[in-house]
Figure 1: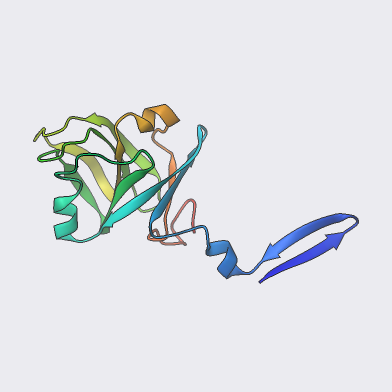
Figure 2: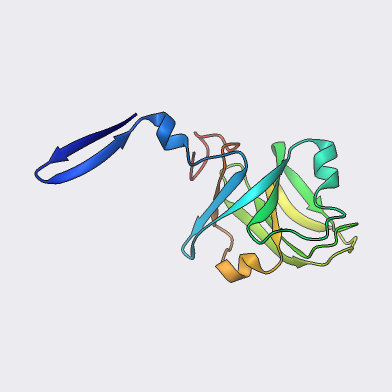
Length: 156
């Protein structure tokens, strides 16, 4: 429920916690940094089979879409592009939702390992070139309901 309070001609809308959470959805990630903000509709890969499949064998990926790989705990992660037909940017994120590394323009079908770092909790894959286009870099913050509120730099 939204409540409206007016004080000396200024009105402020105060909202219940349920309304405040409405903008955090399982199928959307939000990113912010000095460069601005962006959001992507995402599919979630949060078990071994889904993470192994990833975006393999797909012919295309809409510009505003991606896949968010989520792990049970922070760990060292490495990716490759075997059977992946779409060039991708891989954004490696720690448990606080802070980008630790961005691998730009991963080459389709390449089996060379792409090490994301230690202590990685999630990896966002988006179309190649978008992270540079937006100006994303290390330190960018990612917001999603799977990041623990008490740990996240930008909680839901």
